[in-house]
Amino acid sequence: MDGSPKKRGSRRKSKKSPETEEQRQLRSEIKALREEESRKKKQEQIRAKLEAQIAEESRISRLNQLKIQEQWRKIMRMEKAAELKGDIVILGESHDRLAAQKDATIGRLEETLVEIEQQYQLALNSHTSNIDRLVKLQDIRIDALECEFDEELKEMETEFVKEREEIITKHKDEKEELLDIILAMEEEFNSADQEAKTRFQNARDEIKTRNAEEFGSLRMKLDGQILRLEKEFDHSHTTYTTNTEADITRLKQATGTDETNTRTIDANNRKLQRLQRNLNHWRTKMANNVRECEQRNKSLKEEKDNIQHHFQALKARMNKLREKFGVRLSELTKNTNSTIKSLESKLQLVERILALSEMNLKLETEKEKVMPFERADSDAIKQAEVDFESSEDKPAEITKQFQTCVVTKSYTPVGEWNYLDQFYKRYNKVMLDKMALDNEKAKLIKENQDLRVILQKYLDGVSVNAAVLNNPNPLLVINGKLSDSLPVRMSSSTSSPAATRTKQQVAQPQYVTINQYTR
Image 1 (cartoon, rainbow, N blue to C red):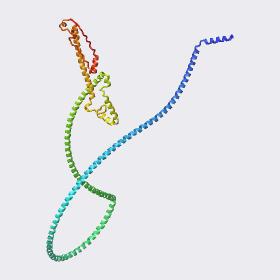
Image 2 (cartoon, rainbow, N blue to C red; image 1 turned 180 degrees about the vertical axis):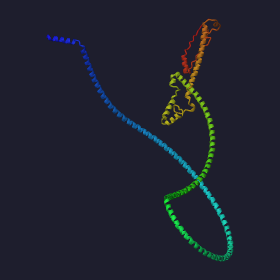
Image 3 (cartoon, helix red, strand yellow; image 1 turned 30 degrees about the horizontal axis):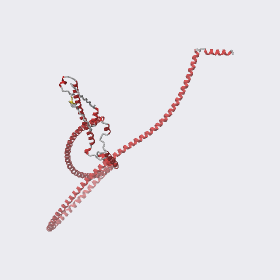
Image 4 (cartoon, rainbow, N blue to C red; image 1 turned 90 degrees about the vertical axis):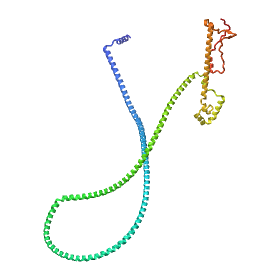
């Protein structure tokens, strides 16, 4: 019992004892270390969490990238397909355009071919006609020449017969004479021949003997010369063969080339001859074409002159038409300007009418706002309803009537001179109201003037001055009547609503009758 209080007191004393500086520093260091460890743990946890999030994010990003790439591939495929389709369409259009151009060129070429064929047919027809005409002329000429030839042949036959007889007779005479001459000459020739033969035989024998002697001597001499020349020929032949062996080979080659050249020359000559024939053919054809072209150019020149004259005439006509249309255009511009001015004036009038109609809406009564036009009678309304019900089976006729003209309430077309009946009704009503207002205004002005005069007379009668005393008394009543007549109001049952409104707005004047008044 006694020991326990002491222990409690010692604990309280130990708790209440102050900490030293080292303890506080140690506790603060421990606390800092704990905080640092907890901070490091938190950082590690956060780092691990972030790494996991980064890995997950990278995985998701790769997956999304793959998805996006897949989508982009689809989109790019679609765009590429659309682009290719557009290119195909463009290529198809260009192909169609080119095909159309080619078709047009083919058509033009066909037209030119047809024209050329027509020209060829015309030229062929003209040529055949000319040939037929020439053949006819040639036949006529041949017939004439045959006639002439037959006549000349007959003449020549007769002359030939005559000359033949003359020549035969002359030939006989000359033949006889020549035979006589021949016999005489034969005799002379035979005698001369015998003499010449004897002389020839003598001379021949002499020449033979002399030639035999000379031949023997010359033969011996020539044999020696032949032997010597053979030796020289053999020596020169050996030297020549040795010296001219290369020339011989060259000669052989030259002869071979010469043969080939001769063959080529022959071929070229044949080719030249063929080309010369072709050249002559084409020259003749060109000359024919030149003549045809000259004729064609001449015809084309004539056609050109005709076209030129036609063009000049058309140009003059166009100039006249241009001047005419220029005058018409100037008149049209003048009419247009006048029309524009008239339309502007009408537009101003319409604007003024619209402005006045807007102002007039404020002054319309309720009845006029509800029913702007006069109300039709009941018979007309019933007839219109009956006509409308009967016309339901004829919508085309009704629409036609509405499209082409103005119709009444019974759907009957209105005449041209009755188009503005409703307008004139309302206009006349307004003019009637205006005239009634003008009349009422004039009456009110006159009544106001009379009241002013009465008031002035009353004031003159009440006041006393020299001017009043010199004038008659306006308030003098004689036999129950005033000396000045008062204005009388006329009540009319035909007054317009505007006049009625004006009368209601203007206060009724109160007349005071003075029975007696004396000065």
